[in-house]
Length: 232
Image (tube, rainbow, N blue to C red; front, side, top):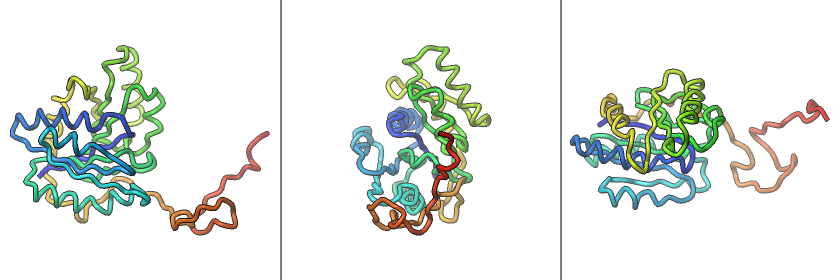
């Protein structure tokens, strides 16, 4: 079974892109399934089920979504094997932009919305910077000049990535993405695999449920700003 990580900010069009790509892969006898990691709520499983795509959804709730994802990645792969999938897409709802769900040896796709602003590629961080493919959505509702500027900003952050414009509405560009995914290497297991970037280090009183604000209530991994250095 092949595996691909698909990440991007919320509402960037990850699910729509996967639905269009899965239909193309199915026509080529490639069965794609999805494990979706989200924070609070998701209706994506219904959308995948309506398209006949096997899907599982995990919600992190009060737990850090980054750690929830990595704790379940190997189990998600095992689920895909049991489902008899050709390709497993592990979809992450953006995590925190400071880290990335991408795994060494696994095709990494970052989905980003061209309407989010030209500065967005620099703000997403390693989720985009370490991706193999950047799928830019909603490019069909902006001008050609805006598309080129956005693609330039993406390539400036990640010059080695393949940049594809993919429409989650019409499916334009999904064929190229399907071709790249179909050519991905086999992933025998994720057990023992390495993340391409570290998860955030944060073990503090707020991780343990503290709600009160102020230095007297902070302990553990606490990082403070130096406001004395800020000019008036």
